[in-house]
Length: 356
Ligand SMILES: C[S@@+](CC[C@H](N)C(=O)[O-])C[C@H]1O[C@@H](n2cnc3c(N)ncnc32)[C@H](O)[C@@H]1O
Image 1 (cartoon, rainbow, N blue to C red):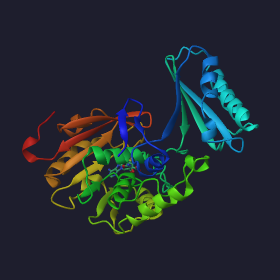
Image 2: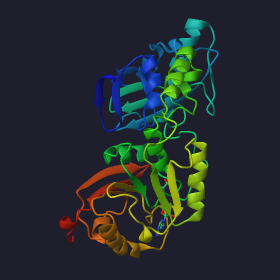
Image 3: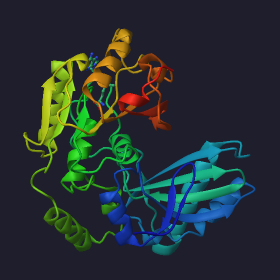
Image 4: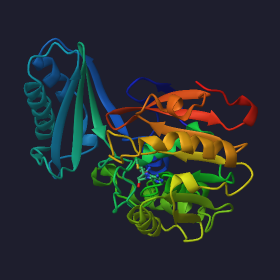
């Protein structure tokens, strides 16, 4: 429900107020961080950067009682030294606060109260204030990492792209530490992804503590205690299933909400007549399983046992459809961190099988 929403390669822009900032941090399953754009200027020298920083009303967000950190990144910028640009931004901020309030904030690179980001693109400088802090894919429940966990916001993105809706049977037969299933369970139970973690906005001047507490209370009141339809996960590794159970527990998901078992993917059975598989199998770059020959037998298993199901597989192995000898209905490019991957979508409808 935000106004003026615009998407770009690097993110999504929208207009809102501080309540909207809090809501975006609390409710977005997909965002990595929510930044406030505080200034934008055309720049031709490092002094222009300092001027832009000096002209920004930082005192609205923080003051001498706060600590500060500035980071700079650039794409196709003519500026020679990013380090110098960083210093100029910081000088502008501390001069501004000292002029307004008599004292300057100090720098803390480890645990700053205010995190400012300067982004340079060609001759344009944009200043952002971070309201999230730790990346939003860190939901607060993960301890057992498993061997190659998916980022939580990517798992949520797969659920959305796959068109999964709560109530539809979901199976992840390479479930690892359970990321996809835990994201699905939170979605089905209306648990906002940010409910169990702190945010950077809580350390700023304009933090509206009461409004935040009201927001959280409202979110808690909307949580469903149980899932209407259980979810299903399996993995060949007992340690992975153990990790998934521990993660579920920390995520406050009831033991009966996700059916977990240790099982080779070649032995899986469909838990209902129709449903959806969303999964992230091992692949060389992330995991050395030595099991490249599972694809043909897996394909046979899917054709035999999963007629009427839709199968969504995320992998960096672009040859996967060929190895499975299945025609992909869709192939969606996605990034798992820096790793380029595809989500391949296969409809398991008997008459449509054909060799690739
Ligand atoms: C990339 S990881 C999945 C990570 C998971 N999405 C997560 O977020 O933790 C792949 C998983 O496949 C499992 N695996 C490898 N071979 C398998 C097989 N033959 N049957 C079932 N699981 C298998 C591994 O134990 C590993 O947990």
